[in-house]
Length: 399
Image (cartoon, rainbow, N blue to C red; front, side, top):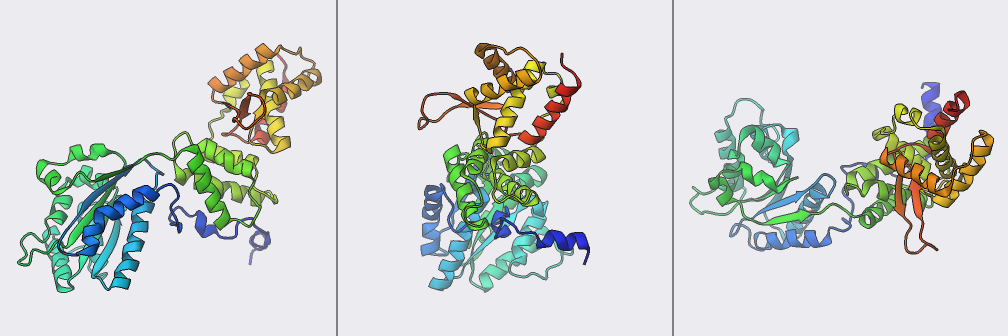
């Protein structure tokens, strides 16, 4: 075995279960989606209680990272367990249409859940549909199929797949309702891509998933920390910072990705804990928004204020610094670099300018803190890196 590989593999890790940080992992409980899950079950209650007598169509709509796929897959897990326990011929199939790439291959993937040996070539769409009908009738099966990112196929091939699946057994003698459907899309506007005949077969049953709030994201990240990391190896400050960064768009997938990258970076640094600086480094590695030219174009005084913020965050390993803390360090830096100390009002203007350049973020302190103040963060760049870059620039030239 290569010496470097062996050495790295022997290093201890803060992560005890990497699988939990995989974006495909479905947790035992989907936090903050309980009401939407209950609604989905209620929509399908007649299908579950009386298979064949009813069919259902439901659309789950929401932006990236709002839990659409996880909710459907969790529902599918419930259906499989319940069907086994109650001896029902009810099956669940989940197909990602974007990965399938076309309406025909999406349909083929559904059929392959029951007959995995069907070749890609050699059959027409009509023959695959007939094959699915024959399988369902022969095995007396009832199917709930989720078409994830169905809008991708509709844009490419039109809405025929939806229409064909909803009318699959219309010509059968027993007229059993064998296929129910969940469609997953990011935008309700996908319905404008459907013709009237297809819309008539779909129902207006929609479950809209709103982006997660900062508090909800904090709960989700904390829950993954419990499962994925050894006890007391991720600081609350790191969890809070992840929730704050991702709250701009409410994307839980990105929150989990940030947590994983921060954990890997902490391992690389052989840290005993995941800290806010590791989160900042992880976020910068994905979205490096701090450009060198922005920092270079700052005046010396603006650089000193930014340097003071970076030093405070690096040395305290906090997610945020107060204006007072930054200003105290700023005064010391003015002496160090032999520059005049500006007033509090001028320092506040520098901070506002840095925020306008997207170099820092600011937010009011929480109600629980003594006194109301402004908190300053560096979510998109490592405090250590920004400190090093500014020191190098200031030592080379003071304007």
